[in-house]
Length: 402
Image 1 (tube, rainbow, N blue to C red):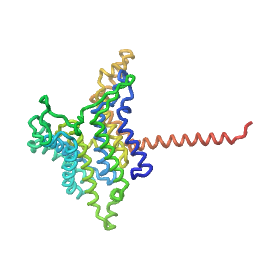
Image 2 (tube, helix red, strand yellow):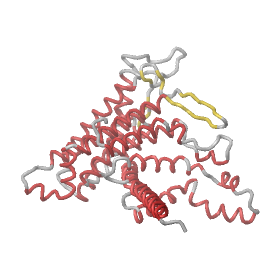
Image 3 (cartoon, rainbow, N blue to C red):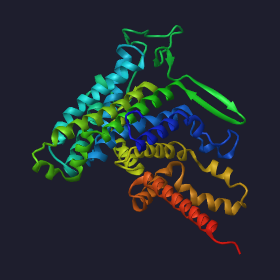
Image 4 (tube, rainbow, N blue to C red):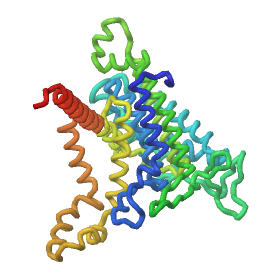
């Protein structure tokens, strides 16, 4: 099915179900429940789940298959965002040309950076990509201000020409991004027995693109090209001894990975037409590394899980302040309530990074394969338990009755 093997088809179908049913899956608690704080089914956050999932999928093609650890992928994310916003300013507010241009610009940028950086491997490659990303950040922040608008960021205005679209709406406002007339910010809310489910045009566009991006990544994983990349990761020196030159393959996957990052940047700008230099900072590059390792580097679905996990913590746990904690533990005596809140305070709100860091340490120590390995261990334990139960039942059925 889809030109994939049975196992890959199963994973692909799971990704499709998760992406299309996210408004239901991410809203497990009623809106009037005290646990509604943990719901994540609103458009902006769901869009970030799938957009950064695309970013992590592309990074995993490079890191998971070849072992080349790039600390500069945020440069392609930012380049894609700037390209998309310029397309909105000059051509039209339709997101398709903007997304295509963001991939092209990021791909060309990746050719230049990859051609230089891939002359080295290991830590030297990582440092080179980090240096290029920081140079890109500083260029966007101060040197290329006519193109990037510096620290303020590039955004659309009423003065933009927009050759194929209106510069202003009928009421004099700035046009919004759209897909052939369907506004990206438009969403429909369905209320069912206390639950509220949001269905957003922008989210489903991102979700469909993520599904396609995931499918392409699976095909790359299982292709002869993917096998060559695994050989590079396994023993590049031995590959050279056979007479094969690994550099064209590593450059090709570096460019593909950069185009994935540019696609993610273009989608970020399509949902919110603003591009700033902060998207090129080293922290953004480090974040996609965490997503990939946390989910499971070298696996298919791992980067998607890692991206969703980190973005969930960033957007949900960072909103838990002392007021929310007091509401949760108000049933406790005053003295005990204050002690509990004092203990939990460093791990939520502004301290959510501490919680994420501790969880990342636990995953790396006990689950080196990431969240995917954890799921595999649980599934294996369930299968073992089911097998033991079936064996006990068969044994009991063959015992003679007293």
